[in-house]
Amino acid sequence: MSKLKLVGSLSIGIILFTIVWINSSQDETKTKNMLTTNLDNSSKDHLQIQDTSIVSNTKNQTATIPMPEAAESSVIMSVQVEDALMQFNEISKYPPTSQPILSEAHVNSFMNSSLPQTSLPFPFDDLETPIQVAIELDQNNYFFGDQIKAKVTINDAPEGSTPSTRAVLMSINGEILAESGYQETKESTTHILFDTQAYDTDSWPIEINVGAYIDVNGRNIFITAPFKINDETASLDSIGFSEPVAENLVIPVNLNVKLPGYYFIAAVLYSSKSQQPLIHLETEGKLDEGNSSLSLNAHIQALKKGGDEGPYYLDKIRIERWSDELIPRDVAGKVEQNEYLVDGYSFKDYQDKPYLDPLAEERKRLLQGLSSSL
Image (cartoon, rainbow, N blue to C red):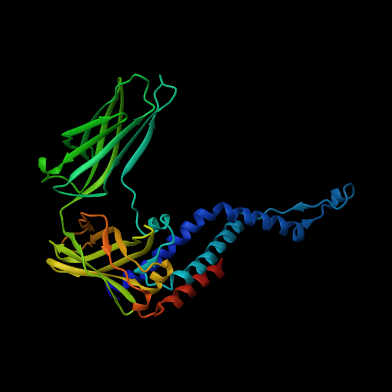
């Protein structure tokens, strides 16, 4: 199986797993309540037994047999698998690389767009309320030459106290690599800046922490947040002219590739009118050094699911160079801008073809087999 086909197969599996996880998390309480109700009713109808030693004094007294924990877990799992089958029937209408998004929260089921942050309470014996400290960065991945921006927020400090903050970059082993050359405090928040061009970064590791040593009138606090810093392997140059081709809206993504290799691109297509997320898009392929392109394909069925003919814009764009014998780890690519405009077209300009997943029946039988074995 080629790498492209393998990843395509894994993509649908990952999406399915995510949906099951999300639904099971959101519906856990509902499912348990439903099971409890059903079991109570079932117990009343089918699980009533008479205790002969008591019946002589108490007419028609009954006892409910509780369902064993293992059986209850099995029923819950069966409900989740059945729900997954219904979800699968829906998502299999669309290519794994062009999946409609149901809500803004659904975006995180495809990609984690949260920023590195830590928030902790710090209790002290002489204080009734712990001091609450949070640290947050503005990106997950940085590149040598970037400015690393962080902010530290202190709440519930004793009245009249004057907190001071010393910010550093440090390895995950605790070695201090650099100190911040710029800090500005406004009310309870200190804004911190590390300009990587001002430091000797030759020996810096890939994984780094921003650390903050905080003094609140003699009370010492330490907090960190992690990030990665990379050499630039590729950067997003532009988004090309989009156009309908057969059943897809083809969106060229133009890259400036500094290190050839196998690349992966993901993005979310948004409506320019409503600002709502419509489709999660993916593409991948081998790229040579220099100016190279890969195309995102928004399938007509996914576009119609969103009910929006455009114009659109791309956001949450993610570029990765996948590991190989040259670099044994995935390395993020650089995206300077958040939003890129994409032209829209009438749905009549596309070939209205349904998507046929070649492995749909195989996956469906697998899920059905799992359901029947529970």
